[in-house]
Length: 248
Image (cartoon, one colour):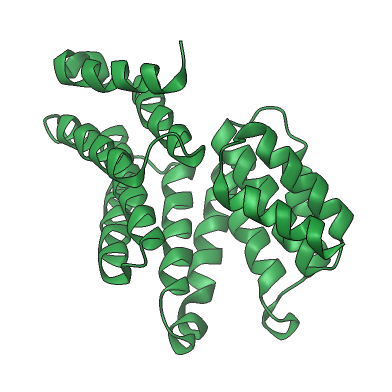
């Protein structure tokens, strides 16, 4: 059975199962990641993913505000923010990301969990990308503090490590940047065997981009090729790998 058929079946199941059947975090993890993976691999478009996030959100809104409920609502909002970001609609993107952060913060007040802090950190980083330089200067430490708190609670949170690594690789040395240290964090995480497909892909693709920036083209090609082994249909990675090979 191909992935598109599986996605359609899952979408239909969401409409008919009871709320009690989808309350479990592990069940929502499957329902969340299935369409996200399809989107990353170019098998569904952003409109389909947006609809799926709204569908999950409507189910979550029927239940009480447990920390897990708030956490998954924060993730669906963050995903919508990412979609708007890709569409270059900054106003809508920032609104969804800020909503995601509010939900993640509410989740933390009930249960201080690593991944809600990671969502806060990613949200801060994504907002900064869409703001001016003055905003970045005033707020860049916030994202780092949130990522560090995430790692205090769970040293194995790869996405929190990714936030730290991106800062180290992109910030000037006077602001705490350290390309060598950032690359090491990315390389260490890229060798892990316990990561879900989405996280492994993002780590490898960011590693490839950083290695290209550091003029390590051969290693960059290897990392990008590994990313495409996970999601061979990802157009961004395909384009980047083609550019890397042409630059040799």
